[in-house]
Image (cartoon, helix red, strand yellow):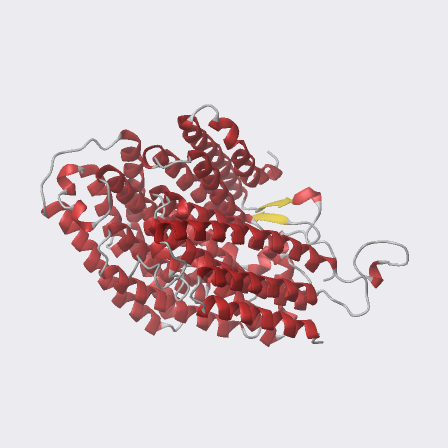
Length: 114
Length: 495
């Protein structure tokens, strides 16, 4: 069954990919990368989504049969943490680049060739 | 001894990385010696596991928290993983020794931490039995690799690192989408269970999922067109790290790709994905060899040559036959030895003479004869001259390609190898027959490592049978998925 979340996730991924491939400003590219990661996370969560069920926390009236699949949610938590690490790494490298080249335009940052 | 001690392979580098700041109090030198000590212990553990797996013939399966898979995460150390974990540990140890001489830029403690995490990530990727865990280890490897690429703090290093981050970010997103598709249709992340259930998967979903995973891992595995980061990163990274990238980080990516590919061989649309990979791999060889021809920087030239060899391994894995996989594993072993040798020697020259441009290699035969000899052995081996190790694995790959009806791919690869001979012999000519110079002290530790690796190249070249039988066992570990499923003690959940 195709849920509406899939379309949201795929469009976020495509918007992010567009930004990474087309934008000239390094920060915009990194924002694109983050948007793409968000899209992937949304896709993962929607894989485990079951209409009409509640969060997978065992409490009164909610047994294993009334909850959604918990595994994708655990995976998304991990993926978010990894995404934060990557973004932090990328931003610090962007800082060094700005220090050395005085610009964030990727067309001007091109010393390595061939 | 209990096989569960194999989990030390993951635990030791991780814990040791956290102790680095404490060791730093004892001085800069102490951190470097600490790094050597940890990698030496890791090599010991890996050697024990190698011996254990190859004498009993049984894989070691570590179950985290004693939960049986697929509920718990398991490590699967079969013939392949045992062999490559050992290679990772040995190469790391050598590069830790080399770091003593090669790394002068501060901060050394951060370098040591990232070094250990890089080793941890590659070991984990090779040993894990769970695809999401594979993703996590891949990101550990990738993030430490990004940081190490930028370690020299020059503009070039930051630029190379940024390219790597952007491509790596796209790749890991693709990989995660692939995992989401597989999980969505099979409801499991355990590799053995995926293999068990793969036959019932929708052919289109499986094809898209596999293609996304292949694309995602192609960034780490340096397959065209996702390898644009590699030559820059190889050139800009500190010399020991370059050797580690080429010797095992790439191999871990390739292995992960091959493993997931062969797990899903029951899927109907499998052949289509293989064809995609054959085309990517052949293009990799072709493009990289011609790019290597016009390089002025020797480190960059060898980086391109390394990418070409990786393409060859990718081709071998994409053939989908037992002989192809065996040949690919054999080439992985040989390539790890040869590229560790070449990058170590070139890095040694660059440290001693202050750069890796072609001009500095003139007269190297007179200035640093031992290093020049090592480079010559490595170069001749990389070209594929008989009686050197890569000759045998190249031959096996070509035969396997012809056997699998990919004669055109074999032809392209052979043509590209001729180009390889041109640029390597140009380098050898420069070293021995041009220029003059005074003799320079070469350093005992590095000389010993160079001699050891060069001896290994020649010994495997003259007596390939033993190495070949090990590679065959390891290749069988990847190819024989039925055996893999049987080895993992799956709980009867959700099957």
